[in-house]
Amino acid sequence: MINLVLLAAILIFASAILSKKPRNDRNWKEPLALAASFKPLSADRYKLHNLRTYEFGPGDTRAPGWGEAELDAGSLTEMWFFVEPFPANALFAHSFLTFVFNDGDNAPQAVSVSIEARMEKGESYSPIKGALRTYELLYVWSTEKDILTRIGVSLDHTLYAYKIDLEPDQMRQLFQYFVRRTNDLHKQPRFYNTLHSNCTNELAKAVNEAFPNALPWHRSWVMTGRSAAWLHRLGFIEGAEQTFSNLTKQSDIRSLVKAHADAPPTLFSQSWRRSFQRADLKEE
Image 1 (cartoon, rainbow, N blue to C red):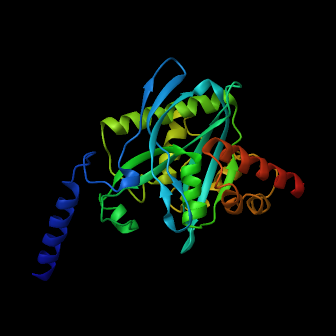
Image 2: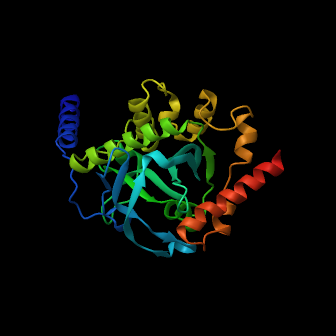
Image 3: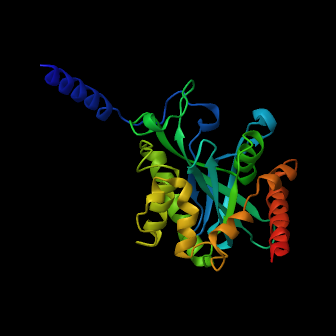
């Protein structure tokens, strides 16, 4: 009898979870309130709507904001992969990308994409809840200053930066797949999932759409703190000739983010990279 009651309870719980439908119109937390979308302007040019432009300081002080940007996939010159290890357990981490555009006429523009669990006001993140259709999935596009100052200054977390080794045309194709996935999600919401739709494996899925089987399934899709080591092993990180341990020692940029946090967004991205490259040369 007890087993039947337990089975009935499990079935009711499972039914409740599976009956949930993802939505875009909930009472979202402010930094997750708006969903990004892209409007094609030509074959390579896009207008990005709902670009997040927050600026974070110590103790979570911030200047909230949203804007727009015109981006030319043909002017992509760099792509960076960032890892924020979880303080409680470095086996897990948040990861995200930055695309750097440089058309030669204006200052380089660095725009980041971070896959997030979209939480409502009053909600907090839980990995267990994240596996039970609690949060919607959100592709957050922001200025690089927004996300780096949030992690390195406001949260004061360790932050690693790795430059991705791809040809310009490969970066262009990959960016366009992220554009498509962002627009698809804007039209048809989906649930975040801790195991199979998290910050890291959503990035991997986009890469594999652009370049089939480029990133075979690996435990780092779940144990996300190992994602950079896996990319290094596959040869996608610049400096692959170094051991991953040595490369990572050079890649902690938290102090650089703090040092340049008062710079305007465009100068911020240029400034920390110049300091990063100088430190790189010293190591050599």
